Image (cartoon, rainbow, N blue to C red; front, side, top):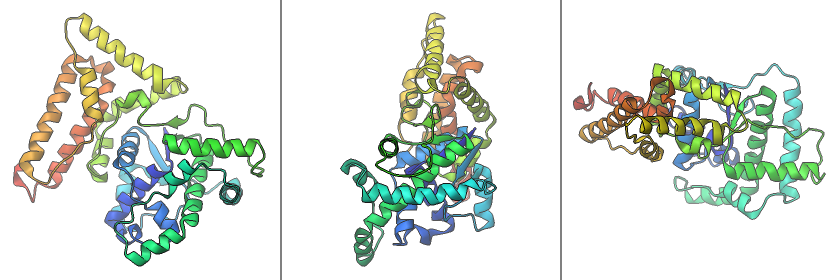
Amino acid sequence: MKLILAGKYESAIVRAVDADYQPMRNNTSHPYYVDLNRITDKRFFDGAGTFMSIANETYVPLWLDWNFPYEASATLASGLSLKRTPSDRDENEIVYREIDKIAKQVISKRVLSRKSLAYIRTLDLSSYEEDEIATVKSELRDVTNAYLRRLLVQVYMSFIMGSYLLICENDVRIVADIGTSLVTNRIATPLPFPDLTGKLLNPDLFANGILNFSPIDLNSLVAVREDKIVQKYAASVREELKLQPDDAQNDSLNNALIATYRASKASGRFTRVLEIGTWVVKPLHYVPIAGEILTLVEDVKDAVQKGAELLNEHKSWHMIGVRMHEVSVIDYLNRISNKYPDARN
């Protein structure tokens, strides 16, 4: 399963990597990086982390001015299976040139609604100096152009590569407005509008959010991807997507969850799987005090144990979110054990 991160999902991952390896990029006032490295709501990092755990490979467009310049960052990218899109397609350059033209027309012809513009232009500038804030505000048109170019490249590359696109409702609305303008010839381009039927993923809608989890950081996400149980569960989710691409988000996965619930209840084992599912969706908060973290991980283990007791192994992929939480927390505890000895296993 190939995955491309759209819009703010991409920004969340780029910013997280750069925070450790190229922090200056997170504070530059250049419009391109103000857009790309923007501060996002945590749900974008969580959503990207959830589906990067499930995907075999995650791609960012080759044209993105972003890389892994240090051995440690390259190792992290490898652990995440985070790659650049291939450069061996001549048509990609044509696509990129046309996307530049489309983005400019979207702005000049005022295709987007005020709501969409506000979504793109709402920026957290708290880390900037006053003169930089003034500069950014004077360049919001350039920021908008940069965002649209990125989003369109992600959409077209998803189509070209046959990958899934992780995209939120606000960005779907932007893409739909652009698509309508192309069909009605309000925007002129020789590019056909991509058909991504069955390829759009939204973490909030996918199986009603039952798979969602909050990675502590990207290193914990690597540990989650390497976990054999997560790999097994992820293979089941990928198979459902492949078999039922159009309705997997609403029917196939949820029906499996309901069937397991009913089977458990019928056998006299009163399950808490739906309650656990609600718990999984809540963001995982932690504080850097070993005792409190240990209390939290015990709660996670308790939920996993209850789920394991209630569900047959071949159907327990619904617990992938809980398992990812457990692995993420335990990995974090191991990495801070030098500073907090009580965190050692």
